[in-house]
Amino acid sequence: MPTSRRARLPGEFVFILLLLAASAFLLWASVGISGFTSFTSAGAFPMAAAAVMVVCAVIAAVQARRTRPGSPGDGGAPGAPFPARGAAAPVVGGVVVLSLYMLSMERIGFVPASYLFLVVAMRLLGERRWLYNLGIAALALVAIYLVFQLAFTVVLPTGSLWQGLL
Image 1 (tube, helix red, strand yellow):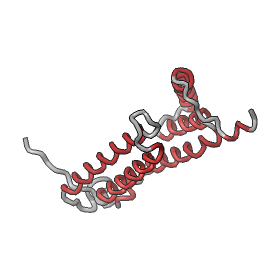
Image 2 (image 1 turned 180 degrees about the horizontal axis):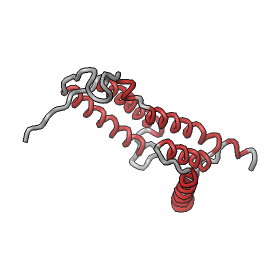
Image 3 (image 1 turned 45 degrees about the vertical axis):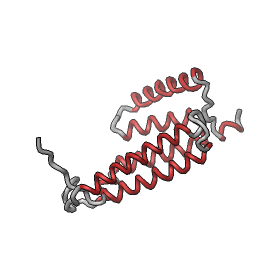
Image 4 (image 1 turned 120 degrees about the vertical axis):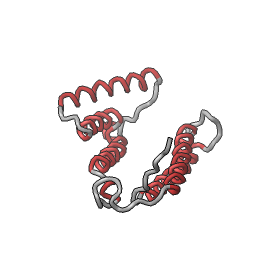
C-alpha cells in the first residue's frame, strides 16, 4: 500500500522548534519545584508531563525535518503566510482567555476565575446560548469543586481580593 508524504508547511519546522524550546523550559522549571526526589514529590507529575512534551516535540521535529519543504501556497489559504494560518483568531482568542484566567486566579480565586473562564471559553468555541453557557459552567464547577475540595481535600486558591473581605 503506497503512502503519500505530505509537504512540510512553511514555518512548520520553526514552530516545532519553538514548541521544543517551550517544552524544555517547562521541564527545567518543573525540576525546580522539588527536584527529582521521588515519584510522589510535588514536581513528579509536572516533570513527567514536560518530559512527554519534550519527547513528542523531538519526534515531531525529526518527522518534519524528513518531509520535503512545501511551497508557500501549500496548506491553509492559498499563499497565506504561516502566521496567518498558525495564529488564527480562535487560537489567539484561546491563548488570551487562558492567559487572563491564569492571571485572574491569584486575584479573584479559583471558583470565580474558573466560572468566568468556562463561560467565555464556551462562547469563544462557538456556543452562542448565554444561559446554556452559564448553566453548564456552573454544573461543571460544582462537579470540580466536589471532586477536588471534598473528595481529595485539595485546597483551591481563594484569591487575594476575597481575603481582605472574609
